[in-house]
Image (cartoon, rainbow, N blue to C red; front, side, top):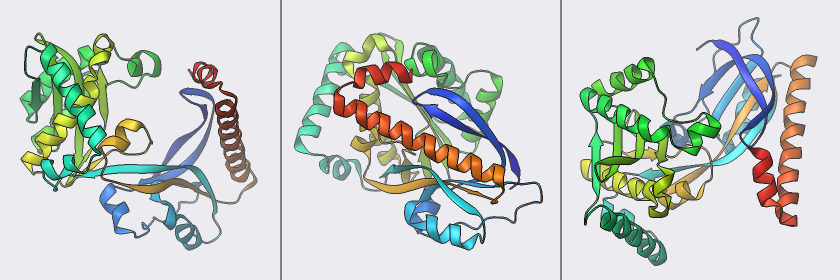
Length: 303
């Protein structure tokens, strides 16, 4: 594990205003590591390295980890819930834990899309190397239509290198893809690579023409059903972020932080305090906009 030039953006929503940079050793905890409740071990910093950036660290471990690093100065970059779902429950038990209202809503969404599809869902799963190539080609045709790709540049990665990486995981049994079709046309995709016994929620998208049919929600539900029937993985990591979709399908969550630990030089401290002050200002602005009922204006500014 070595340091690299790391971007530390000052960001409002999807818009990056300024990017600061430091040479940092990056360490991201897997979900299984985070669930152990033990602080990670960090390598000794090299002479020209500014510090560490530890992502997805359980919030309760931030202070012990900072204390263990001696005179390094800690800055919390962001705090969030890391949602996850257990895949060893069995689908019936998993689904029964949803509220009666949620179960009814999900069944109605599944039926609505099934009716549009001629009476049953056309769901296709992909896992081996050849299947993943087929998946990637069809999923890319959907991703190109999505808001995530057109406005945020965050669609399913394209190109031979991205495909080769996905196929390398598939050869090891460490990738899963799903597509929903209507009239033989792909309308929604979900891609999840694996880290050990944990699948990671990486890319989900749908054709906006079919938004009224909630294809992303239906696809997630049916993917969870297939995974629990399959039994090859223990956990599904929805990663950071607190969207309604993740909360709906999760069975648990960890309060986590991204922790920046830097040597207390004037430049490092200036960057750390600037990041904290900016994040606090954005949070205050968001709260004020919500209080004043200006959420629509705020969303436009963030884009």
